[in-house]
Figure 1 (cartoon, rainbow, N blue to C red):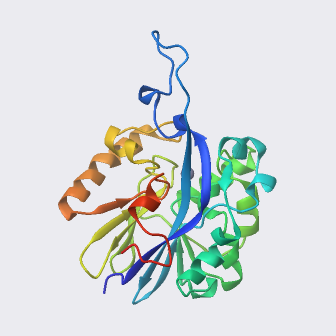
Figure 2: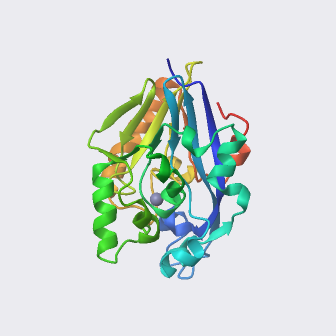
Amino acid sequence: MPAQEIYLLDLGWLGGDIGWFLPGGAGGGMTLSNRSPARKWVEIPVSAVVVKHPDGTVLFDAGVSPKAMETHEKGLVESFPIVRMSDENRIEAQLEKVGLKPKDIDFIAISHLHLDHIGQLAVFREYDTPIVVQKHELETALYLVWQGKGGAYDFADLGPLRGAKWTPINDRQFELLDGVVLEWTGGHTPGHQVMHVKTQSGQFYTFTGDYLHIPQEYDAEAKGWLLSDAEEWHAYIRKLKLMQKARKGKLVLGHDPDLWKKYPAAPKPMA
Ligand SMILES: [Zn+2]
């Protein structure tokens, strides 16, 4: 049986330079005829996905720590500051809107280990909930953080998760539940994965994590500075477009500035 209902959780907002998302050609970089291009500050929502399924409840991603401005590397939160956050954006409050408590989550799947995807994961620690992540992602995050070169991976998030029920996978595609498929994409980070969900009405949704931050990346088939491997990224974009066309699927970009204009936040189901 495929998924019953899908909810989007509203976990606050971050800000950042447009150049993180789109390459210079989209207005970010200097050219001979324009040596001082206008910069643009973009604000993006931070969200997570809850899939209610007959075989269990899945959480995909876990937002940013509400305390990140005080606890995280200065350079990181200077580049990606929290611009909106209230108690209502805490994951417990968001889950409560859909009648769930943290202990009711059976499986956690994580797109990648950047600060805005695992920041509230420690909430689930005491329930020993399995955290499904690509093995290569976990290795990369720990390796970089240990060298003090974590970038958007931060020890303030990862440290408290030492000994959690990490469940590393090495699969290109992994069907966690019937109709709930994790697929490795790489590109944004070495172990990045997206989640495909089929609903009982036969609709396909792809939750892109940070493979895509804003819709212009999909249209332009390009990404800004938040790209660790361009070859990997490009190897997947056409496949993703093909899948969308073949399945009449819908893409859900968790950081789309217009996300909340396109889909309702919990308590309303988005599907
Ligand atoms: Zn990221």
